[in-house]
Amino acid sequence: MGVAFAASHEAAASAASVVWVQTNQPAGNSIVVYDRGSDGRLTRAGIYATAGDGGVAAPGTESDHLGSQGLLIYDAAAHLLFAVNAGSNSLSAFSVHGDRLQLESVVASGGQLFRGRQTPDQQREGANVIVEYIRYTVPADQADAFESAYACAGSLLEQDEHCLAFEVARGIEEPEHFIVRIEWDSLDGHEHGFRASPHFQQFFRDVQPYFSEIDEMKHYEIRGASTDER
Figure 1 (spheres, rainbow, N blue to C red):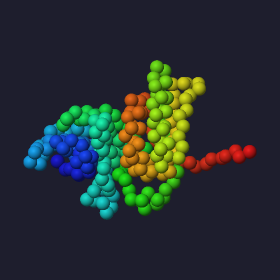
Figure 2 (cartoon, rainbow, N blue to C red):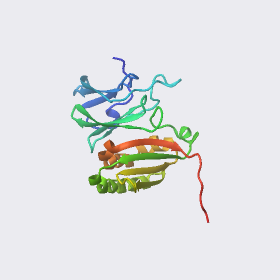
Figure 3 (cartoon, one colour):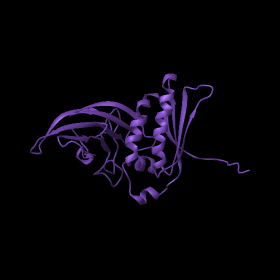
Figure 4 (cartoon, rainbow, N blue to C red):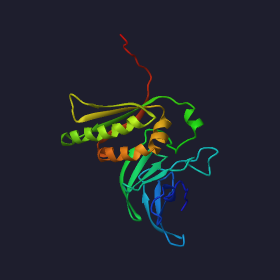
């Protein structure tokens, strides 16, 4: 099996008895799980599809198809493993049960060829304020809990240096529809800054129960705007 060692469980500094490796195959990304013995030897315990595709190496980065590290992130407190699908621009979340994984959700990253954190010079190059829109259809009996969840998540956005503004709007004619609007200092600031920050893991836990209600999650560039200063 062709494997690109994109990230491992060791990099996430969790339990020493399990190692996770991302294959990053363009035809279908997977996570290979290994049990690690006391002598350091690895024994394959299973393989789990991410429901996404791996990425193709950019010129000059053939030894590392994702051009970065940390593309597998383990949240030990929540027992969740996050994997980037660079070829299909999505993020997969697995719940962890010893050396077994269960796919919980797959969401769009909102960008193309989502990579790991870049250098400061790369972040500054072409930096541009962008707007993320997340559109939800939330059942009426969950609406209050949804708003409460985003009140908590919003406090984390306010603490992040890359978030410039955010708002949650509810439909008037169709109150089951919600739009979350977040302004980021750049696409890199969102995907490689906020998502790698301590705030992201708690933010994810707050809003994850509503992932199945997402209709759209995408980034947009502002092409025109006006301000009434009267």
